Length: 412
Image 1 (cartoon, rainbow, N blue to C red):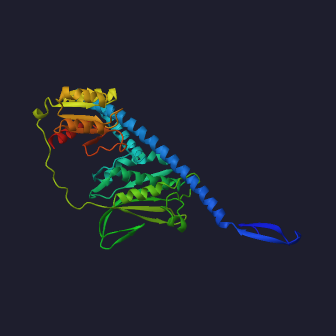
Image 2 (spheres, rainbow, N blue to C red):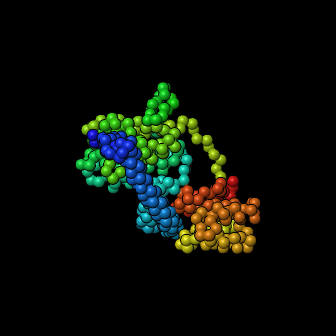
Image 3 (spheres, rainbow, N blue to C red):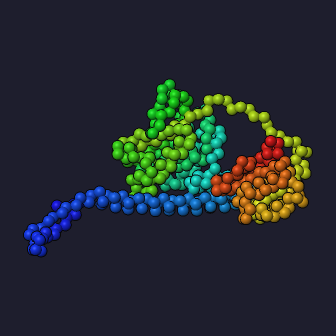
């Protein structure tokens, strides 16, 4: 006896208290031991999940702060370009700074997506363009031994979805491919377009006949066994000693949000190919009537600007004044409420995350006092606060983007 059994031995007495024989009790404790092991495993996974949540919150907070810094950099550079437009060398140098800040904004978008603070921003976008801009951010993560190649199919029709979510999926697949090639190898990103007349089977879903785009991530790594392939997208399943098992599970969920599916091919010793399949847009985008306000319609338009960061508040003040707006600034929601009856603004432009009264509360309070008031909320953070139906704009943005958004809100 042994293994998953517990043995107890004790004497049995007669009526006079004399031992007559011994009793041996054998308890099967395999289920009890299995339960303890599962409980310990759950405890470890919970600790990992809590650690990931803490890292996500930290990443989201950092991305918010960086977006505010990038907004100051982009805004001031754009104003300087306008000042020195006839100096080609200065314009070129400032354009390089603007380009770097825009790449920084892409990185912070990744951080916000990772931390799940990224607002879903559904829009049409070009798949080839998205990957071409994203690949330079991937190369530093791969190391010198992994060779990354991008092969884009020509003239792809657009997708509709959240570009940040697509980038997060590709990032997870690329990092997994890197880990499958510890001594180096080849990693290929490909885009392609195809149609199918029959239902298409993917992992845990079936896609209807139709027109599709695909992103393939192929590596020359160690490949996967049949058992690993079967459990690939299970939460917390991982083959890595220090892994969490959340990367592919997260990617699987994001692909569902994009109305797509996964196909996976792999063989031990021969590498793996992940195929992300997404429905493409076939209809021509309707031509929307261009919202336009004549410059004289904006001239002197009263704006109450609410921003708690002094550098960004000064920048936005100057930017809007240069475009003909009449601007009054406030550093908090409480100050904005005091100034409101004195200014009588046509539109309030406010940060979402303010100390004390936040942007949404402020918008509701001021709109109750003036039903004709227009409001534009902005934030460097994605979804910590919901704009509650008010027009919204993500930081960072260029001066032209801000003015165009103001025109839309005022003309709506």
